[in-house]
Image 1 (tube, one colour):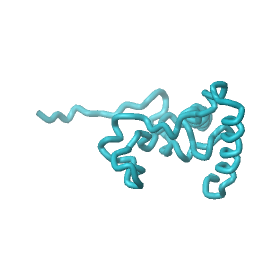
Image 2: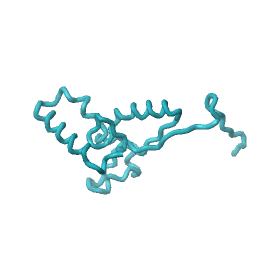
Image 3: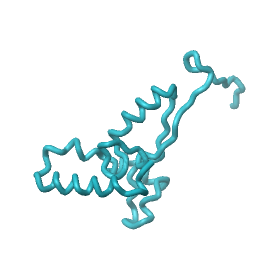
Length: 121
């Protein structure tokens, strides 16, 4: 049975909502490794709050691996509802478990990836 009793109430003193829609891969901080990562969401939330926004919408961030080729990069596949994609993990959280050689290689790779002009906002 359909009812007509639906209404939208204002949140707090504002009668509207503002926000930002963004894919995680475009969130880049000084600690990012070529693409955005989950830990960058805190800075986005801080930015949204300072800007008076109250909504953050993320494009799908889930693992879409099925075919093991380029088709798996499509974030709207049905399988994407089941797992978070590991590419957005903050590798710095695991820094102490890396060897010195691994740390050096990661720092070099980060510098190279973050220097790419395509990745600049």
